[in-house]
Image (cartoon, rainbow, N blue to C red):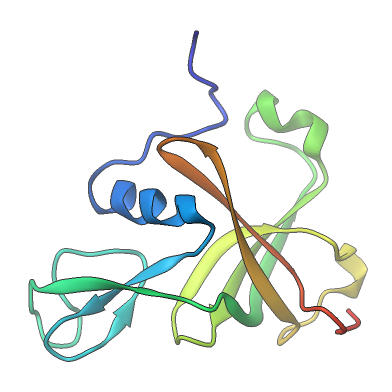
Length: 139
């Protein structure tokens, strides 16, 4: 069976990030020396330069920081999905994560919109990240 071209094959620390998200819970890299949470994953801490780290589960709640609405897909594999919204969300953990935004119309978007992260496994090595409005929150 040929691989799905819409599903990337992560490598290095990104592979570890997506493998941990297979459980449905996103884990953020955390410096073992100074405690800084960071994303995307890196081999050394940007604060203290330590190479020691672990992974910490995130509650997945945050606020909309930025977004873009795609009307013309770069890849034909996404043609049926347009228009779609890609969002940068600042998690309550203090890091920013990029994912797809669902359940909100483009004209309802605003900076600071409360969102929840959902991790959906699409393949054994890749988990798709989507953001959704928090329950009880109107867009």
